[in-house]
Image (cartoon, rainbow, N blue to C red; front, side):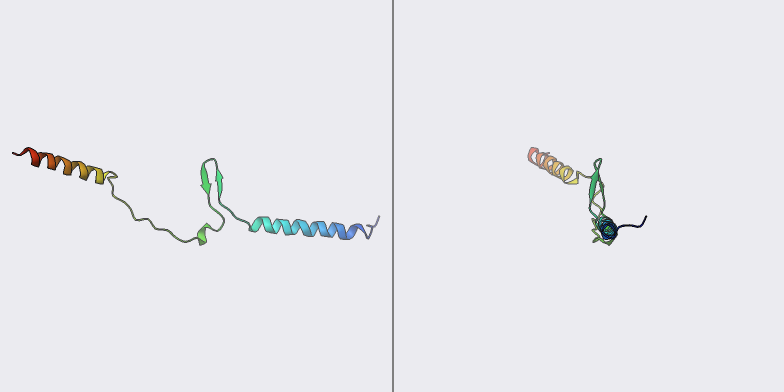
Length: 80
């Protein structure tokens, strides 16, 4: 049973539309949050590299220095 000539272009258009949609879906990339985990986009390897130098091992170094200076000031005020 041959296809009707009116149905043939509709079938081709549908196939072309699915092909275009498939191409668009495969080329779109975005960052996604899944279960609290941020997953990168497909182009994460082409992103700019950000470098953060390592900080001090002891995270409270400023607070420790302030406490040491405060104690030294108290000792200086009290005298020998």
